[in-house]
Image (tube, rainbow, N blue to C red; front, side, top):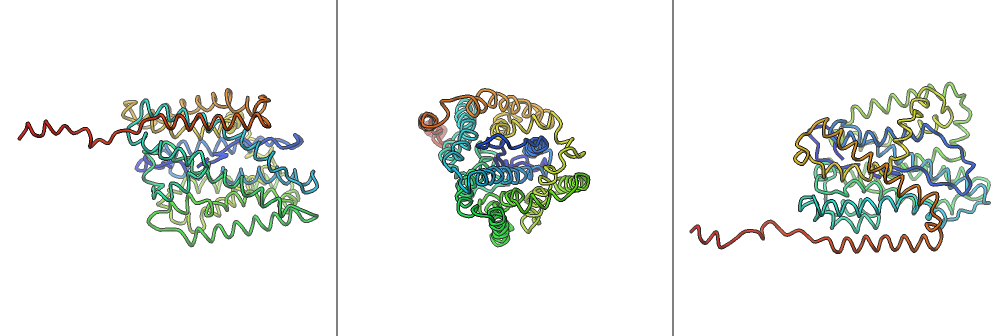
Length: 423
């Protein structure tokens, strides 16, 4: 789901998750235990992103990296469980259907609602860019659109209400291709080992691409590219494989808890010290090490959820924030751009508080009225009727996109007769 940082960078866009972030899709069977601290970890990640965009936390953009690792871990665990219980068979259509029910309804509502709000209240630049970016968002190719458009990630996001959706596109592309690869390698007695090898090798290749393609002037290509960010998803996937889970299972709960504490402190320190484009080491291996530390933390939390770190992350406020993290990620950036300092009449922490309250309210309503009903209770959202409803929803979005007028250029408003009269 994908960035603003320090006060001097208040124009930056979201870096996003997931499953920007997102609660994991329901598996084919419900026997999978729920690990509360992972919900809290999502809550921490989305809170960091919100503070980052408000200019109050320079390293908060790394919350998106945490979302990526969590998504890789959770999705791979579900797919491997299905392969193990189905004699190596993974129902790709069912998996993609669950992902669609989980992610697309909230996305469709946010995109449609944002188009209407920008049309009613936004500046011409917001409207123009929203219309330009919208089709790429729907196609889950927003990250490559922004890269091709040469939209500098760190310094030109304040006119793109969908700029944060580059990270959602990265995750959606992962959800499309990774299961296809697992169908080929998650077979036989050594399925877990095969997947672990592929995930580890893919992560190394992704790191090599980042090191090779990084531009010291503009890091947008490596920051938003699916290929150069895949290592975060793949390191999370690696921790869900049999070899990794067996290695973690050998740890007693107490040492796993101490390791969790050390990793959490290290990650937190890195977040405090990192400052985006002013931290070039991020793209020279720093981000890879951060993702590896996050993957190890997730593994240790699954082993010792009752540790001090696990209990802190499992607190009710953080878990609740984690449960609405996907919609919170979707809504916070449009809210940030629409409720600017000029419209509110104040800035600083007061503006941050307003943005957080409005974004949380929008996310809670989205989860209550859109996500949960479609995901858990609506029979029409499944099977053939679900596919028809999805097509109808995106057709309605296309119609909305077509009727929103392109703003006129400011240059066309010059009255030449007044210029003549003044001669």
